[in-house]
Image 1 (tube, rainbow, N blue to C red):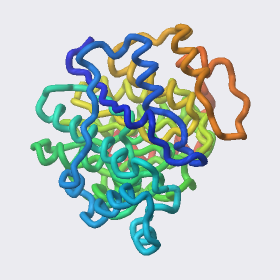
Image 2: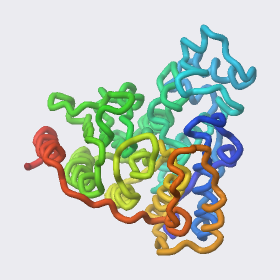
Image 3: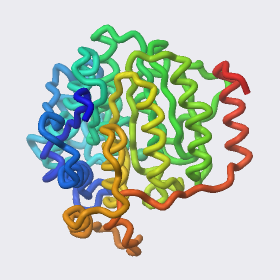
Image 4: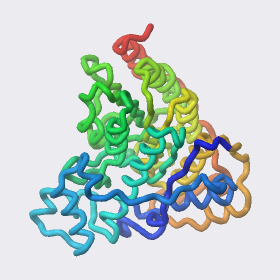
Length: 375
Ligand SMILES: [Zn+2]
């Protein structure tokens, strides 16, 4: 075990839900923690209980009146119509729920702590599966994200003297909140692979964009082979060329074929290979979670990301304790009732390799040219 590897979690995610019909009414972080524990992958000294970010820490990026409104909504368990419209709380997939301030503030506390540990050289690799709320706005909730922990982590790194940070986002949705906040900051490289034509409909391929902005929107049905080409031929070389001192990876699991909210077609092998490739660059790294709305695919993907970062071998078949945990998960969703045995007995999906479509090959060539790499 590399002494510089840390997993930041919290029990707040075990009891907190967004509401019974919300896509996030599923356990995600708690299942990942439980699986890692039962597999023996969280030895003494590796797991850190997450702090909660203070309002003062949050206002490094977020507006004070927005942070106050979130706290007030939690206290009252309600929000008035005018504030709801202004802050996008209590509507648009961003419900008022029991821990509507503390839960996102805990995810931010984890990412801020990770930034501190990385900047101080206390840790080299930090995993916080609760993080990755990349849609959060300065003064508004958006897309199930109330606060924006990646932005706060990157700003904390910069505040601690880090000169260049690379942010790599493999969530199915474009990281609009991060791009809006930091997309014109030359100290930050933002690279995202996401589904074209999907909410929030930002992040187009733009030949004229700054070289520190690498958006790779892909058609539905993206397969492992295409994803690997985009990642290895564009994202990794862009990160290497940028020479970041620290890397932040948003490891959303909603680009997986089994996810109900996107139409990308990846297996978790593709995500693990991507995380491994970035980790292997040897820079201090924070890896967060993100989207992921099928409780089995997200738990298996994120547990495998931790194995990838911490150097554990993924068994072909899970031990009985892990299988029991996975079989005990409930999903309120009536559709998608077919639940293959592999969701309960394995971490690793069958690969989803496939042909490389012309539009993807073309985007790789044009991207490489644009950021100054040889075709
Ligand atoms: Zn997403």
